[in-house]
Length: 228
Image (cartoon, rainbow, N blue to C red; front, top):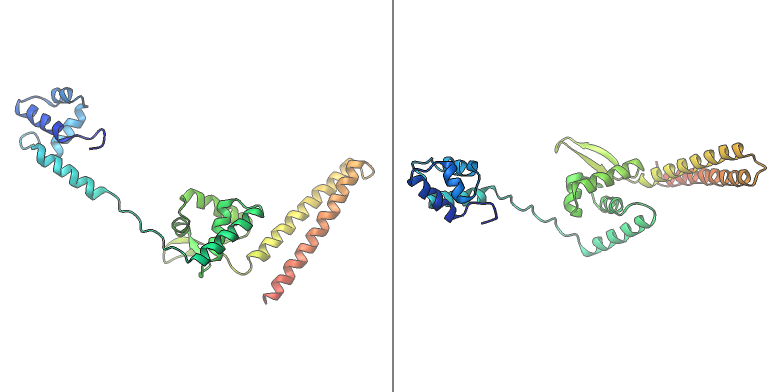
């Protein structure tokens, strides 16, 4: 039996103490156990008048069997080709700057026929903790790479991808470039355009402003090609 559990020998000692008319406190001292352990054991198994060590031991084993959680079914293994694609896509996304967990979640969603999974689905498929999935989807939502919709039938949120995720990603990148350009422009004004640092900041502002405009234009062309 696991450490801390009463053994059959312990229960026989309890039965002997009860037969001798000893109180729970004295029996617990013989066992080196808390008095509450002895009293709970006896009361759970019929009381001092009918306590039987063998029956109590078997009843405890049966309760443990009933309470033992069943193992969750293992997720169905994906075909080798899909696994390979998912691994390669995950690697590319990591190289782009996403965390590995966020990359795994996004790759998993992209390769799902439905394009949407609940947090519990992702936990099972990726074999990771709920906390890891929660952190990853928060990052992806913040970058507009995934959306969230309510599954009323299952009363859970589903995290989804669609054909516009890369369009939204490009727009988010454009906003980032525009923000950098504005900060650099303000820096150039504060430092003075004629100073070396001011000139450097001005060039930085012009570069990111141009990149931002081109990114927006590319995103719009992409969206047009998809017929949106």
